[in-house]
Length: 199
Image (cartoon, rainbow, N blue to C red; front, side, top):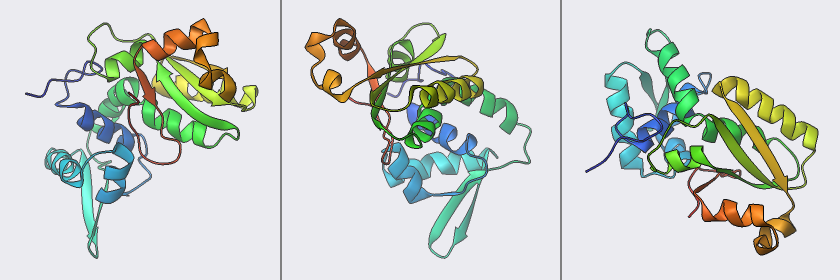
């Protein structure tokens, strides 16, 4: 039996939250079902089921262009604004931080850790007060600071970005902080394509 995700127990599943976050937080875009499945790391069938439910509820719209079904936010419903705020605060960190960090040179990998990652991966507990991010590589610290500020405004909570070199990340036993980070839930941001949780 599926359980409601701890980040927002009003939702049916984590996939529903991820799908809403991706589409609602990019209202200017249309996504094909194939793109959504790839970005969410889910099957085409599972994504289509969620899209159908959300379209029936009047949250999403879809249209066919040839054989491709395109999905977008339905902007003319009063549900969208409050739902977008809830989704941004709960499931927003993955799509917003992925998009932001993809644009910064020198970011090799990035992970969300701490209480937000634990809730995202299903661990029960209080709502996270902030979002902790570990960036691996050699990006400009000022660009990371700006990215954290922007994400914090969008997510309505503090975003803390900690930067480490690739050599430090690859030799975590020499750093107690990295050892503790690896021992707790981690959500890797897929900076090339797709989203998903790291083991």
